[in-house]
Every structure is written in structure tokens, then in C-alpha cells.
Amino acid sequence: MKQRNIQKWFLRIIFRLTRYPIAVIFIWVQLGFVKTCVFSQKAVTGIQLNQLGFYPNGPKLAVVTGDASLFEFYITSENLRDTFFTGKLSEEKISAYSSTKTRIADFTSFTTEGIYVVVNGTTHSYPFIIKPDAIKKAAVGAIKGYYFQRASMPLEEKYAGKWHRNAGHPDTSVYI
Image 1 (cartoon, one colour):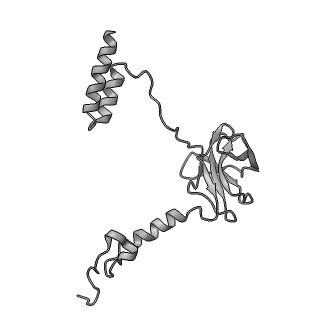
Image 2 (image 1 turned 30 degrees about the vertical axis):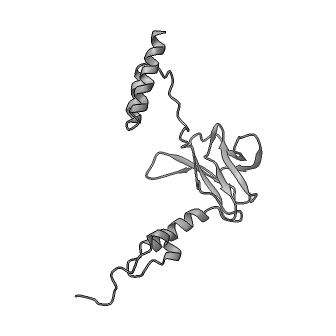
Image 3 (image 1 turned 90 degrees about the horizontal axis):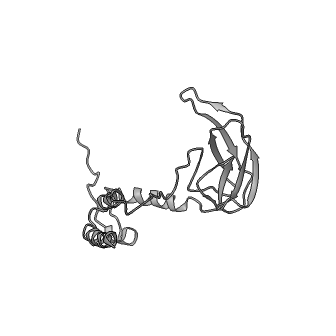
């Protein structure tokens, strides 16, 4: 009963200290109210690929590091239950600047649209997508960034929205 009252008191303090959530979590763990820590996702370092995605008819490569005895890779569903493609890894490559040994997984011939992961042994990649506009959001964001960095031209309201403005400094004269 006494511990329950302490927990209620502690919860009241937590709600008052919302400006310092990390400190609150640390204190909560130290006092034993939280028995385990949970992390949202383990970093995957064994397979590197373009996490934005791939075009269906474009090149698709992943770099596999680690165990040199595994020669095959698989393209599977996100839940790892269905296998859609099987391929052979390239010969092992050794960099002159690193001790990491790598193999290339080429799945360019796999063109079915969807969300997949690359699997090699017990390691799998982050999910990636194959579709015609796989990198459209990134491309639009980059182009918008260049547009907003203009200085010698006005940013029109129909394109810049609330960030519209007149032209900055005009490049009409050169000083030497």
C-alpha cells in the first residue's frame, strides 16, 4: 500500500515536470518503477541500401557486410514470411581503406512494386519500396529548398505560400 501511494505521488510530480522528460524517465527508472527499457528499433548495419526506394525498372543494389560464408540473399515481405526473389551475392570485395569485407546484392531484375526487405542469413535490411515515384518526395523537397534559397528573384505567393517575398539584392552591378 505504501509503495502505491509513493507511485501516485511520483506520477503527480511527473505531470508537473513535463519540461524535463528525460530527467523524469531517468528518475523513474532509478526508483524502480520501470523494470525494463525498450528501444524502438535495432540499428541494422549488415545490409545497406537506398531506404527511400527504387524505381521498378532502375538499378537496385544493396551492400552486404559480415559473414563471408553466406552466398545468397532474398527479397521478402516486411514481415519476412513471403520470399519474392532469390539472388547470389557478388564475390567478396576488400577495401584498401577499411577492414570491412563487402558483397553486392544485385536485384535489378526484380521489378514488382511493393514494400520489401533484403535478407541475408539472420540479418535483414530496413524496409524499402519499389514504385515509379519512389523518390518523388525527396526530389520535390530538394527542388523546393533551391527555390526558397533564391535571393535575386521574388518568391511568388502561389509557389512560396506564407513565405513569399520580394526580390532580395539584384545583381545589376559588379564592383571590382
